[in-house]
Image 1 (cartoon, rainbow, N blue to C red):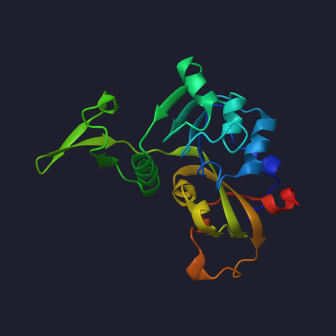
Image 2: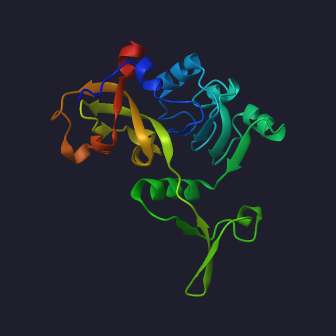
Length: 220
């Protein structure tokens, strides 16, 4: 199967009301060209799962500005005032999740686990409506797995099967999100032949990947 497709075709797989996992940390390691294409395609009603809501002009923050999310699940929104405004005006549901909890919920979704037990949030508003579990006399919150309909991720280098290499901190959420979605789209700076990547430096296997977009060609 040829996984390399145009950016238009890849992004068209994202449908209204999908849960969308997007890699990146304040835009670092985000699939910027796919985000721009999603703005062009005007797909709305999406639920965003991301570390943060970016900046107004960078990363997923651009999609916040175009109001394409009905819900945002993230660790912080402080770098994008529009996210906060939409939350306060009840235009967008915003669920703030501690970063460690969020990444483990995504890991649980990708690895088939029943959830995550954590003490973070006990005795606070975070606990409301959630199940608690007692283990060896200690009480924990049960945080349920997170999965997405589509994951949009970015890699520095990808082979034609989808095996991925990330550069430095750009790895962030991308590796786990690739495991936790029904359909995975990877935007890569460089696409190489199968066998060109050193197996010891493949950070995420191509078995997770459905479509590859050549971001380097778009950038020029």
